[in-house]
Image (cartoon, rainbow, N blue to C red; front, side, top):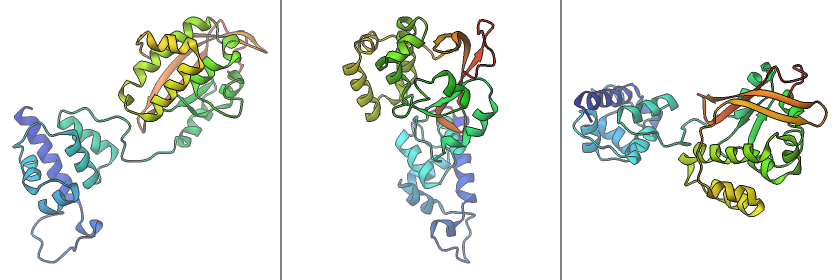
Length: 267
C-alpha cells in the first residue's frame, strides 16, 4: 500500500478516536486527560487489538491490515456505514458484503414505491420480494398478489402461472438463473442461500440444469414481455437500481413500452 494511503488511513483512525467521548463507552471522563477523545490504549481495547498494532495503524507504519482487524475496528469505534466503507477503502480492502453496521427496515422505501406509477418491487439478497407497489401487485398477481412464498426464483420455476405469464419462459428463466449466480456470488457462504439452491434443484429440473450450466450474466435492464391473464400481451423496459442506504436490496421497476396495449395498466 502506498505511503500516502497508509497516512490517510492513520489520519482517519486518529480523527475518529479523538472525537469519541470516553463516557459514551462507560469510561471515566476524568479531569487529568491530556488526550482528546479516547486514549489509544482504550481504543485498542475496545477494538480487541493490541495497543502497539493500533498505534502502528495510526502512524501509517503497517501494511496488509486484515479484514478481521478492520471489522473489529469498525465495531469498536462504532463507525457508521459510510465510515466503515471508507475505512475499508483506505485500507485497500473490499468491504465484506452483507455486514452493514446499521440495520435498516426495507419498509422505509415504501413511500418511494408508492410514488412510482409503474410496477416496482424490492428484492433482498435471496431475491425475496420484501416490498412492492400496487402496480406490481396487479401485474404479478400470481406472485405478489398471493399469500405465501414471494421468492422470485421459486415463483418462476415452481409455479405453472409463471410459465404461462412470462413470454419466452425457457430463455428468460435460464437468463434469470445466470443473473442470480452473478448477483449472489459475494454471499456464497450464506447457509440460507445454499439451502435455497438445493431446494430449487430438487423441485425444478429446469433450475437444476440452468444452475449446473455455470452461466453468469449481469442483472441488466431491457425488454420484459408478459402475457397477462386480463390485459393480454404487455411489454416493459426493466430498470434495476441499487439503494445506497440498503446495500443488500435492489429496486426493480418496469416502465411500459409502446408495445404495451394499456399504458395505464399498473403492472
